[in-house]
Amino acid sequence: MTEPREDLADRYFDAAIGLLSRVRDEEAAAVKAAATAVADAIEAGGRVFVFGAGHSSLPAQDVVYRAGGLALINLLAVPGVVGVDVMPATLGSALERVDGLAGVVLETSPVRRGDVLFVISLSGRNALPVEMAQKARALGLTVVGVTSVAYAEQTSSRHASGTFLKDHCHIVLDSKIAVGDAELSDDAIPSPFGPASTVVTSALMQAVVATAATDLAGRGVTPPMLRSGNVDGGHDWNAQIFEQYRDRIFFRH
Image 1 (spheres, one colour):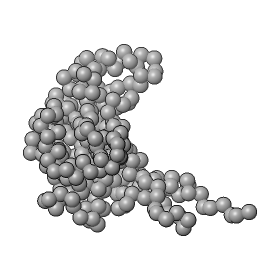
Image 2 (cartoon, one colour):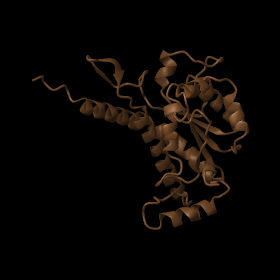
Image 3 (tube, rainbow, N blue to C red):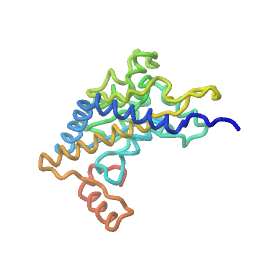
Image 4 (tube, rainbow, N blue to C red):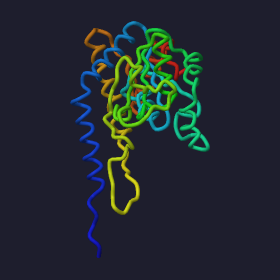
């Protein structure tokens, strides 16, 4: 009978917890700055948008129309790159490298000067997130990049400018994810595995949302929070929020 392998589940949890502890300690100031930007925009009558391509769309979707979340966060969707809902799945990755796509998306979107845009990209090296940040900043939006700075230090940009997402943002949240996004290895498995970027990036985004809500409350502004539709009265509560903020919620209409 063979000896049991080291518990890889424990190793994965330990790695994820370590990364979460690190971003909690090292990104606290950036989280607060991003939350302040969100609170400022909401208090001023503005809106918040979030964009992510591929698996980076998962943390973006996690804060949109979310129980316990701010109702005014809208997904800036780019058809074909939101996730693995296209065939072939590799099309999404290819679209991330298309020059000019970000400009078209922003020009036909409801974003306006003074809004906040979160651009989530683990590597931050492809044309789409780089140009999304560039164009949004030129339009007068406050741009928050959520990325791994390690990629900018250890890989090359795929944008003609040679720059990365982080180079075009007002605020950068560094997920601390290592290049390759794999926390585990095993002699019997030919490639590293156990990605943690979704866990960490989602936690960063939720920390920003929670801090922004608290910030607004501290200013005497009631933050427009959504409730779960699976609790009594949840749908009625959300309907009131949708009506009150109908000019700033785009996933509802």
